[in-house]
Amino acid sequence: MKLILMRHAEAEEFDPLQHAEDSQRPLTKAGIKVQCKLAGALRCMGLKPARILTSPRLRARHTAEITAAALGLEQELRESPVLGDGYSSVALFKLLAECDEDETVLCVGHEPDLSEFFGAAVGCVGSINIKFVKSGVLGIKFDGKPKPGMGKLIYFYRPQELIALS
Image 1 (cartoon, rainbow, N blue to C red):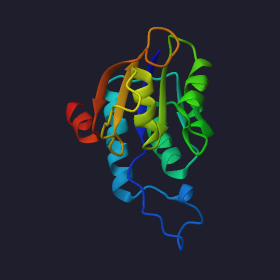
Image 2 (cartoon, rainbow, N blue to C red; image 1 turned 180 degrees about the horizontal axis):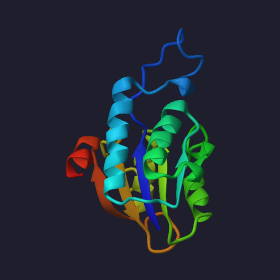
Image 3 (cartoon, rainbow, N blue to C red; image 1 turned 120 degrees about the vertical axis):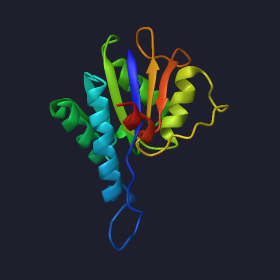
Image 4 (spheres, one colour; image 1 turned 30 degrees about the vertical axis):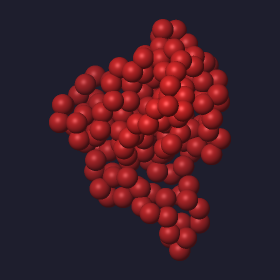
C-alpha cells in the first residue's frame, strides 16, 4: 500500500466569538489558495488515490474536499473520527487494514497526529521530530497491509516545493 499523509491547509485562529468549537475553524483565504495550487500540482503529477480519508474537523474536511475536487475523487471522500478527535496510531492502522494492500490512500489530518503516525509507521516511535507544515504531503510505502515499523518514507514535501515541482 502507498499511504499519503496530508496536513490540513492554513486555518483561522480559534475565536470563541466566531466558532462554537475549535473543530469548526475554517480555512483562511490564503490556505484555500495554497491548497488549490497544491491539489493542482498533485493532479499534474498523476496522483490518483483509490480513496481519501479525512478528519471530520472543518479545516481538514475542506482541505480534503479541495483536493478531491482537483483529482476528480469527490465520490471517494470519507470522514473518519480516527483522523480527528478519535485519533490513535493503533486506530489508524486498523482503519487502513480495511483497505486493499495495492491501494493508494490519502489521509488528511492534524498535527501532532500525523507525525506520531509517521514515526509508528517507520519504526521511530518517540524519537522522530518532523516539521509537518500546513498543506504538507508525506508518502509512505508498505509492502502489503500497513503495519507498525514496516513503512518506508518515499517523499516529504512542503507545499511550496510540490507546487514548484509541478
